[in-house]
Length: 167
View (tube, rainbow, N blue to C red):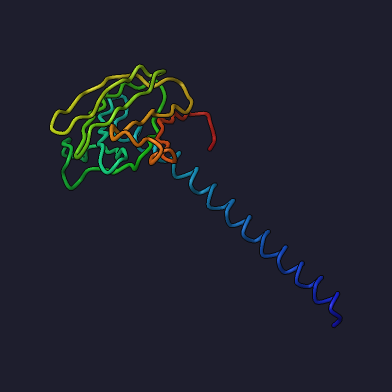
């Protein structure tokens, strides 16, 4: 095969590899969207029309860690459901959010949902709100270390997924 033929074959191989990777990435993103949708559905199944949904936001190591109490109804037990650093909630539901910190002082602010609270170690705070119909609501996260630029790539959010919306 000539050098030009080798180059063309090499470009075709790279194109095939790139399209395969894009296809795989698309599958992963679709799966992630489906699992996020099921997260909201499982909240609905678990709490039904029971009000409100109890949640915990714990500041630890410069991040928020969200959790739901397990079947025992208590936070900080082995059966808690750990949700990561963002929330996916059903629309039109009252929520009681317990805000705590294990290490430093943090602010938890979401103006649209009228949440503006500090998390102080050993002093839990409780915030009540009702989820809107849909949308993504970024949490303004601010550790009080004075070095916000160290945390500029951290973007926790509360996402409300309407029942009729597909991920």
